[in-house]
Figure 1: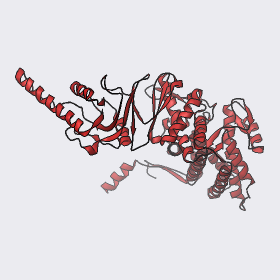
Figure 2: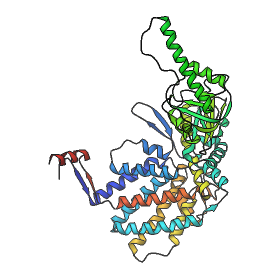
Figure 3: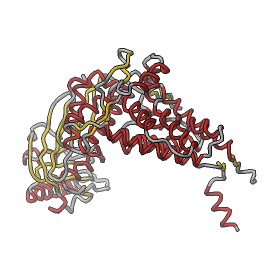
Figure 4: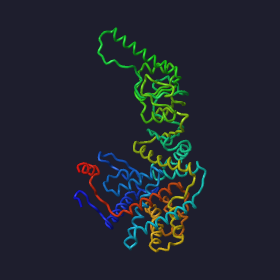
Amino acid sequence: MDEDSRTIRGREAQRMIVDTAWNMADAVRATLGPRGMDMMLVDRMGNQVLTNDGATILKSLETRDPVAKIIAEVAKSQEQGAYDGTTTCIILIGELLRRADELINRGVHPNAIIKGYRKALVQALEAAEQNAIKMNPFDAARQVAYTAMTGKSAEDFGETLADLCARAASIAPPSNIKLLTFPGNPKDSELIEGVVVLKAAASVGMPELVEGKVLLLEPELSPPHANVSLTDPERIAAIAEIQTAYLQNRMDAFGELGIKAVFCQKGMDSRVVQYMRKAGILAFKNVRRSDMLRIAQATGGQVVSDLADINIEDLGEGKVSTHQSANDYACIIGKELNAASILIPSPTEQAAEEFQRALDDAVGVAHLCVKEPFVVVGAGSIQAKMSSHVRRCEPEENPKVEAARLAFADALMVIPSTLAESAGMDSMDVTVKMSADPKLGVDVNEMVLREMEVFEPLAVVRSALNSAIENGVSLLRTHSIIMAKPIQELFNDAAKD
């Protein structure tokens, strides 16, 4: 073996995988549920973030461990695909691998465990489908949005924000929903249908509402500059006259094209601003590139890079209005794309970041329920029902496959058990009672077991289970871990040969 590489094989590799997965699950376990604990993340520069969002915690971990990186990618994939359920997914992977390790110690081959797990997965998903409740899409979206915010700082304003998230998800997909935070009281949060830009008009006296052609301009809206030093007043006046004529030509072109609103990524000459004010054109300057692209997508226009070459095909179409609140903003409603923006006043910068993370998840799960309005009862109840169903299903002929199938059923109970731990309840007592009566859920506020009315999207539960099994199976199949040279070095060695 090359001294630059190291190979870990067989049981040693399996134990390393299990230990890493368990440690990763342990890193986020305490954050699960409405009474989950927060974690303070501190980077090398001393910046800190206080959060209980599992995806944020895992993304922030600095590690060179290959298994840890795979599990962090699983969390990222779950977050991108289902918007929520990352902590549940990672805890399940850790528990499934831990139980698989116990079975391997008893002589069960990993392939038998994989077969048992796959059988149990199908049965568990059957139970989830059978226990799913169909709701009105808007009601389902509002319920799951509220659940997604429970346990986070946004929970205190959950009713208001959940309603905004559900309405936004009914208007546009998450990629077209912008969350904007600024100082203020979260009770004053509002939903704006359209693209919102936190900018005031370039000048007082411009119209507050226009509708028609929209120009998106990348360069500065000003005349060409002569890079010469002049002392002759006549030549200075001549250049100023040329510049004024150039600007007048551009303003005439704006009028001929019927432009009603202008968004400029850079600055604007003061003369241009006054020309547009007199012409009744609503203009904005120093607009962010990301906002320019969203406006272009909404209005169907193009971001123009050459001020001298503006064609009718480059222009968008839409309604632009200005509004005054804690921060002045403009709203753009286009004809090409549905978009929405949620304005969230926040008391502090830290609260704004946490609100943004919470609403990202809430908007995502609300969107899932608008598309597929099926929900399941949360608070650990759906996992207890799936576990009970797997146990009641017909046993496998192969005793080792059956042992793995039952281990899967037991692993599902780690979710209600963890919820109970975070609430200060006896986890063993909760597991036994919920196994006997799966209709019960963990009421973390009253620290009792009862039938709950907390809902999660069926799609999130399905995604978390599938992701946990597929990635757990991939790790179980791993026989060797080779700590190899950097890939680039291998290519360099091959080139030398």
